[in-house]
Amino acid sequence: MPESAFLENRHALVTGAARGIGAEIARTLAAAGARLTLLGRQRETLQRLAGELPGSGHGIVVADVADEQSVAAAFTEARTARGPLAILINNAGQAESAPFLKTSAELWQRMLGVNLTGSFLCAQAALPDMLQAGWGRIVNIASTAGQKGYPYVSAYTAAKHGVVGLTRSLALEVAKKGVTVNAVCPGYTDTDILRASVANVVAKTGRSAQDAMAEFSAGNPQQRIVQPAEVADAVRWLCGEGAASINGQSISVSGGEVT
Ligand code: NAP
Image (cartoon, rainbow, N blue to C red; front, side):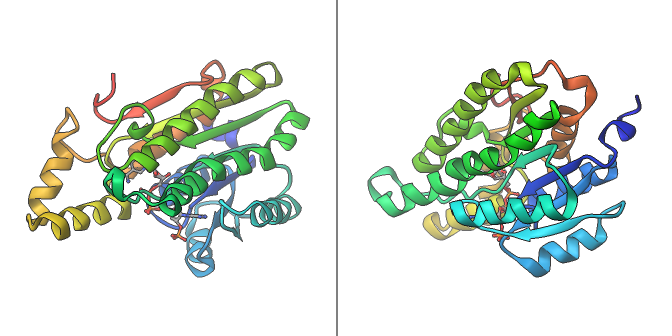
């Protein structure tokens, strides 16, 4: 079956879809035929993107992924409007940095909340539909920070390691049910998160933005920043027919930064 036919009309929900990697994943899955629900916090931006996506029947839901009730209400709304969930892309995330001794308990909880608990809550909300259908795909956008450590982002790194652990365990739990669960782990990618990190380095060290960006690129063995479309293409492949045996994996999209 051609890939476009395989994803045709499958209901895919992408969290944090308003911009960056999530928006690119939404465009890519819509181009492959899926019917999208875009989940995020900014109604107008989500609505604009939904209207621009290829295909028809796409929609939006507004929710904070770290809030249990907000997630439950959003998934009910998405299911009522576009049918049972077949694909979940847990992409919403934040990456705030701080030296370990300046990492407040509030920052720690916030990083765990959006990056880890958010993935847990959304997977719990989507999985019953997939089990009922005997088919589903969950792709968690973790990070190379889920595969190795980086200084000054201990909360984010702990959360993303947690996402990789969640991926591995859930993958085994649903392995016989037609559902796969995988993580995609981007290295530094050209989005607002990276631009904020560059601005932070500039503010804290007085170095130029160009210097700071060069240092981020240098961490990638290909000496470059990853593009959102490269992450989205890995996600599309994991959602496709040919990836049925790929389960519980954490695929690094980082030019070989993690091997
Ligand atoms: P981004 O451009 O900052 O986009 C993040 C998205 O997540 C935004 O749409 C944001 O929505 C949404 N979001 C944040 N907190 C949320 C919450 N509590 N509830 C619902 N939505 C929320 O960042 P990005 O680079 O595309 O990041 C996407 C994912 O890739 C994240 O999980 C990130 O950790 C991961 N990642 C990024 C990089 C990188 O270098 N860019 C590298 C590795 C992994 P609002 O518009 O409402 O803020």
